[in-house]
Length: 336
Image 1 (tube, one colour):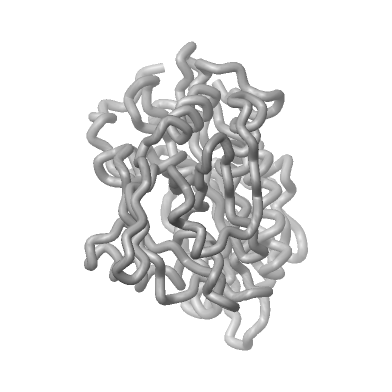
Image 2 (tube, helix red, strand yellow):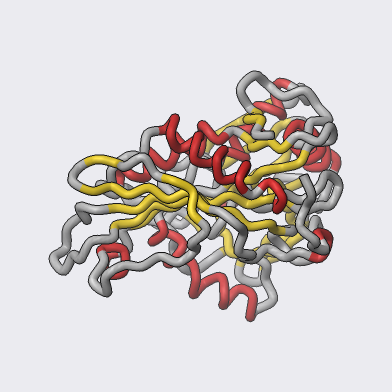
């Protein structure tokens, strides 16, 4: 199969329209069979529920070309389960998890020419999304929904690839206790848009949010979980308002099973930041982005950047994804 004529190495993290996407509709209490389409446009009423009350959730994953030439996706079953949780929290109908995985496979296979070649540094980003489409003027859930899976080739999430980031402790909140911080709701990301633009204008790469109840514990950034290294221990913040990152959960397993590290998932106090040697952000888009500094209102806490532990975690997880290292059973979905 011939790949698209693209300068893969120059891709940024942006949208490029590909050939096909999967679309299914929920009408009269049931999902239809869905199908692949070349039409990238979404048509809906001006009063659609998603436009009035932001009833939408999404997922993000990547398809890769492995060293031996296969096209694979990383743990899509966990994305299916997480979207199901998001749907339940937002009173949306769950798209069956087995059908979710099949829709991802169909979409990637139909866009195989857009999957960047091995060694290019680029990947195919896959975005499943669901939203309420029927007119809804009263505050209530929609009764009709659309589920779509589209894909776009992307380069690194942060400009310049893997380089130490400088982030700040945010004065604003991302999520409230007993809110929706633990699901991948579109409204959570809308909450962070003002703050990320302000951070960039102030010279920072991202914001780290604190728990909104006490503002004394580390939560996550607007688009990634946070990890810390202390000695031979990987430490990740635990909170009911943190999104359960699939990358973070995979790194915890890799740290323990592959690298012999200790793993702690626990509340991490703001006052502890100076005790860690390394820190990073992890998620589907960036895998791991090492932190060079966290700035807390003029106080700068510096870290080793791509230190030895984060380097080993990054190399091992990406090695598993790219087929250089044997994966745990069930982690790799072979597509072509």
